[in-house]
Structures are given as structure tokens and as C-alpha cells.
Length: 264
Image (cartoon, rainbow, N blue to C red; front, side, top):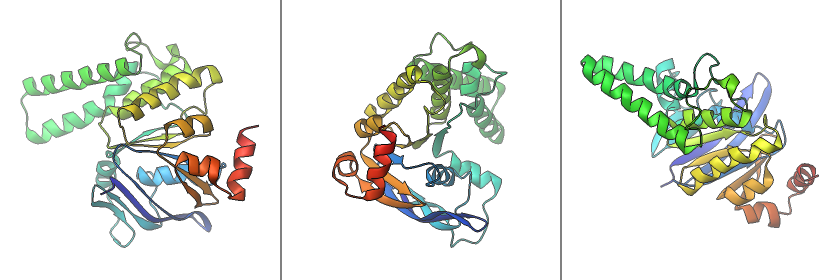
């Protein structure tokens, strides 16, 4: 059974239809890459999966559990949205780090808040709260080490390069142990010299069988890291398949034009 099933996702903003019936599946451990021109709907799709936007139509199912269905007319509460959002980690184009916090605190912040809420509900003693929060910080330190930033834990975002900030953002997304990690153009704000270090971290996650959905314009990277590739065009899936099928074998005119434009 696929870990994620997306069926007939449509999204409109007023009279503008951005997504026009998107359907796909992902198996656990797979890397799915979304490519396409700006405005094709890639970011909106990620935002729908992460419950930052509500689809107009469609269903989202994770591990057999329906997280969203447009047939359910009852609106999700903020708490329900947050709980569903925890299944997905999202790394944005811009790093969105809190400038007043160190790298370590940026990674621990959300996990600490969730843990405190959980322990408060359990009426846990202070000793257990302290112990659990120490575990959160230890886990965050391990994640920063895994992205090559063990020596930058006490640095503030302004003291880090763009590539380092994005690696902190990746560690932060991993801190809540999401089942699927999503990337929205993770290197678009970086110069070419720093792009490689971020792509290297993503590649290492793929080698560790992290289930991922990646929006990128880095075509060579997409070819090398993806199990599946989807080319989106004007809110629909125009081409879907393995990297070979999409990049080398497709006769679709739109993707041929797109690939020529990005490879110039």
C-alpha cells in the first residue's frame, strides 16, 4: 500500500483554477520530484499537502488514513490541521529561520512546544519534563551534526551562510520525525557555490530511504535522486514516470520546451 495517495486534488483561488485534478501515489522510501514552469501549481500542491491551503476538491490519504476529503463538509479545526501537518515536514525556498534564536534553538523550538503540551496533558512531574526536553535537544544536536553543522549550533542565522541556514531548516523539518519531507525549491535562494552542499544533504536523506517530495529546477539533481518525476503544466500532470521516461523518452512538446529553457 502506498504511504501517500493523492486523488483528484483541485484548488481554486476565486475564479483562478490553479490545480485541476492532481492524482499520484508514493511508496515509502521513494523520492518524487515535481518539475515545471513557474505558475504550474507545484508550490500550491505542496501547500495543500502540508495543510497550509485547503484543496477545493479531492482526497489526501496517508498510510490508509484519510487526512482530507472534500466530501467531508465539516471544516478542520486549527488543531486538526496542525496534527495532520505533523505528518509532513516542509523546507521553504526562503529559510524562514527565527533570527533571534541560535541554530540549535531553531531546530528544537517546535519539538519543545509539542513535548511540553504533551507532558502538560499527562501531568508529568518536572523531573520527567526536564528529561524529555533534554532528549529533544540531544536529537536536535544529532540532526545538526548529520547536516554538517555540529560546530554551528550556537550561531545565529545572521552568522551563517545561505547554505548553512538552509541546512538548519532541513534539520528543523526533520526534528518532528515527519513521514514525508517536502522541499519547495530549496536552492532557489542560493548561489551556485552553496547549492551543492544543500543538494548533498538531500541526496544523503534519499540514500537513507527518507520519503520525499521535491520541487526543483535542478534537472541533473532530479535525474539522479528521483524514483519518480512529475512534470506539471498549467495545473495538471502532463508527464509522469521514471527519470528516464520523463527526461529522455517523453515526446510531450511542453516538457521538451521546458527542458530546453532550463538547460540553456
